[in-house]
Amino acid sequence: METPDLEPLRQAMQAAPENPDTRQALLQALVAAEVWEEAEEVGEALLRTASPPAAVHALMGTVYGKRDRWDDAVQQCRIAFELQPDDPLLLYNLGTLLAQQGDIDAAVTHLKNATTQRETWAEAHYNLGAVLLRQKCYTEAVEAFERAINLCDVYPEANFNSGNAHAMLGLGADGGLDYYEVDCAINAYKLAIQQRPGYTAALYNLGMLYGRMTSSEGLRVWDQYLEAAQDRPEEETWRMRAQEYQRDLQDRLR
Figure 1 (tube, one colour):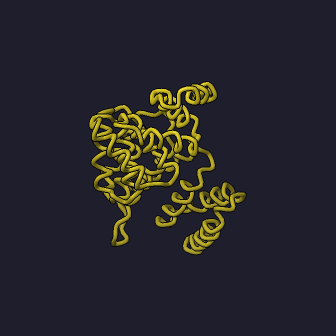
Figure 2 (spheres, rainbow, N blue to C red):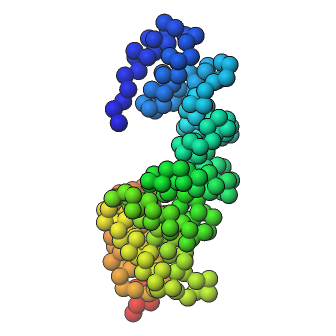
Figure 3 (cartoon, rainbow, N blue to C red):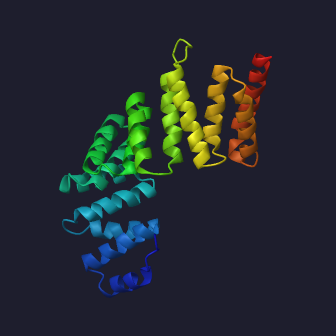
């Protein structure tokens, strides 16, 4: 997306500081340009006017979220939602914010409504799947991720999380394995890695799954993970664990 030219809008607002339409246009451009601090200042002036439109509250929900003001973000999205209850973007934003706050049931409700209002929105299906995964509703999560994948040709995150959901369905609490679900998980992880070569999270989880199966394929996957993660300081703890899991698998395969 092309970054909007902010300077003419800033000049227009300086020329007519009391004009809410001009200020709102600047706020929208600042959000598009991701200039969050200035957007917060411009938007808060709009919130102090009489009866700001739903669009202002919606924009400020985004701004406050980016400024880590989560309670304020939810409040603004709720106000916007009351004014426009059928807006899929508001449903999506509110659901996403509620998920971040840990209100999972409400998040699921809003995200489901968002996907109902806009069935072809891949990101909404993906976020719904992510929340359902947190809720341990694994079958529903798989269905949501599959809808996202079908709507987007390349979606490594959705394939990765679909693999996670299938893995949870395939790993029994008693230590047993549902090989259909495990196979689905392996295929999903492999597709995520194909779409994003060096996808360390997918490689790590695939290595863990092969380890659970005591499969020699796990040795190759751990080598791939260690190579992909070698220059990433944030992966240091995971690299050490991967080396331990690889040695353990080698011992079990002897």
